[in-house]
Amino acid sequence: MNRTITIFDTTLRDGEQSPGASMNTAEKLRIATHLDALGVDVIEAGFPASSPGDFEAVSRISETVKNAEVAALCRATAGDIDRAWEAIKDAVKPRIHTFIATSDIHLEYKLRMGRDEVVERAVAAVSHARQYTDNIEFSAEDGSRTDPDFLCRIFGAVIEAGATTVNLPDTVGYAVPSEFGELVRHVMANTPGMDKATLSVHCHNDLGLATANTLAAIAAGAGQAEVTINGIGERAGNTALEEVVMALHTRPGTFPMETGIDTTRIHATGRLVSSITGIMVQPNKAIVGANAFSHESGIHQDGMLKNPMTYEIMRPETVGLTTNKLVLGKLSGRFALRSRLEEMRYNLTEEELNTVFESFKVLADRKKEIVDEDLEALVTDVVLRSHEVYTLEYLHVTSGTTVYPMASVRLGINGKVKQGAFEGNGPIDAVFNTIAKIAGREPELLRFSIGALTGGTDAQGEVTVRMKEGEHVSLGRGADPDIITASAKAYINGLNRLEYFKSNPVTSCDVI
Image (cartoon, rainbow, N blue to C red; front, side, top):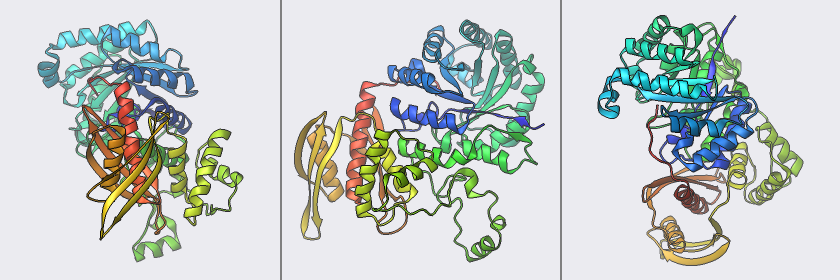
């Protein structure tokens, strides 16, 4: 029989640590329901002790998710563990995930503790968690740079104390597949009581080896893979769920393992996460990139026409890319729109559908053909936004070779309307200056990028901005056939996220 690999998704916790990728509660809840439908075994919903906002999000997710285990991360302290349990106690399958650093460099410079004291702290944390649940995961932060024998010692101690999963993280992305696989084999063979627990791995992508290290660990005996959608995460990111799952799915001879993932939901889930976080997926990204199933070379195209398997090792439909050519336009009705959205895995309420349909008709008057990417942008812009402080009511811009760029903007601010006009070095600069002036804000623009959601001159433009105000950094995203309007939407979205961060501060904490 094939071995089943547990898929532990940490998009909502470690993935959220991508710079500027913080999500509000409504956005996290939306992603969590998609992860549950995708078939992940464990959803790490957040770090409840880090902020009231994170606590609320974990609590809401715990109350909503029907199938997956819901995990809450906590440091190896009683207070963190108590807070974690309070957030996940209503989950169908709650899991407490506690951690402490174990490498010599972390012990000496960060914790200033000896090995005996670290083992003591870890055992105490697991023992404290046992009063709430027997579903406990322990992580050895910076595990890949930890002395292998000490790793076996601390894992053995926490298993004896009641941990049912022990996690070996490559926290700083330092490992390479051959040595990481050997480390997993060493831990499996030399940890006392290892037969009573599952060995997990959590890899980072600093050297571009996160997926390779995870697959090497699975081949060596690891039973759980910790991953994120689209590979998002701190620094260079985490192991990508879609890459691990499809590697196992595509190469069963090499990896006689299986997962419970519904692969046909991968693409839609990836698009949702990208839309909500504002982090665009690079076109050549494996599995979910725009070019992943595209063929431009004449030789490749000829082979594809004769037999798709000549140049495709996976069918696009396997990951949820549709070949449906149903064209939606201004004459399409509500039923056609609902059917297409359901095929794309969006199950909207009647009220949400009506709201999207109104925006759909407006867009259809401006764009001849509506494609999936347009619909995803509409759902994100119309439905996935929570209550916003700032809304765009009106925009008029003048610009040209003989006209000084000027923007006139009307904003809704907490239900009240304010308007103004200001100039800039270009039309977009004028828009940003005017919005900032009306809102009374002075954010620093760190990044501005433009992309097209689809091909053609009538494609919707997608703008992403990264901005900083005080200690807070946020990503804003906007989409519209008019690139200046898309820029205004992105800037306002970024301001709304900054406003959210101000009222939901996140404290600094250790990460695995």
